[in-house]
Length: 344
Image (tube, rainbow, N blue to C red; front, top):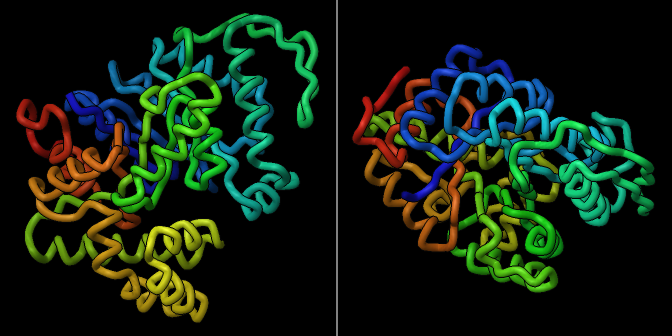
């Protein structure tokens, strides 16, 4: 059975009751995992605890928490606690985030993100074994730290938010999976190759690392809804490319959309958000997101799988209404024939 996950924001845009209903729907439909991240809303671990307490098989993943927000010892304790509570269903998704978030929100210097992440994962791995941790590194110096409540899993999966060559190589070397976002299908063979560089350093195969991108999806219910979904996807992509610093702009530009990226950024910086959305080309939509009726969405997800994706994690553009989220989850589910198509 092809695995698939889904992401919901930890903010209060969706009530807890509806969030739990969607998680239960996905659990019943055979979804692999539920993911949530952190921004200016609620923390990921509390929301995942709520989901774990209301589901039976759905794995719960942080996607992502930043390596600058907590010490590695605290992260190890927290993910172990979630793993115990969920009876072995926890996944730890980590990322460095960026300077605006790390320095502006957390008040710590954004320095050496790749080297820090490497050391961070090393410490977490040691701590999760339950053995004593004595660590003298560049960023952390620890003595006599030991967790008395290790996780249920022998190896809690650690995924990294990675897109650039250095981060992808580090993923292959030290992590169990990668969580890229806004990636066009044509780039996944390149991503797999860059992961393989790091995997070879650790004596692993690239197949040991799960490629789990966030893919924004919208299963439309008729032509008018299709046009609405397209508008939401264009606006959300324009926000990332034009308004989220240089990281996504550079990534999209490297992927062959440099002309579109420049137009989006120029429109965004001039204050014309609607034009920025229009600057997202049809070619970008067809390559990066999933949009159409239920069967078209399934076909497009299968195209991502054929391009090298192991675990698609479906996400939803800002403004997507609950019935559409539920309908999209049902449309892309492994067990979609065994349950009603929409629960909300």
